Length: 153
Image (cartoon, one colour):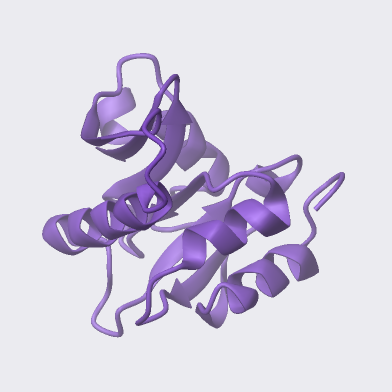
């Protein structure tokens, strides 16, 4: 996606990656995509999982994706339907509503994100507004971060 992210763009990316899109939400119990992105990118945030991205292993994105899934499950990211609220990163993305979506059963969605948006980074939040579980790239590592807006106040 070149330029500003649109609603149609992100739905197309999520569906191409195998997500089941269930709707949109302006906020998650008061937490907007912008607030979640700021919380996840805060200078004091410590990653829950670090994956070395400097090795040449072909499975770095697969391991990052599995770490996000496992972490999300462990901290209560997903609702009873297996869905969460998700925001892809990119220009304008933080001003759009959340997309409520269920991740695919199969792996391999991060390579699709990277192919379609030039990054695999994203932020997700529980429909209750906490926790926030984000995936980012920092130096030579992929991070899975767990935080909340309250943690960053």
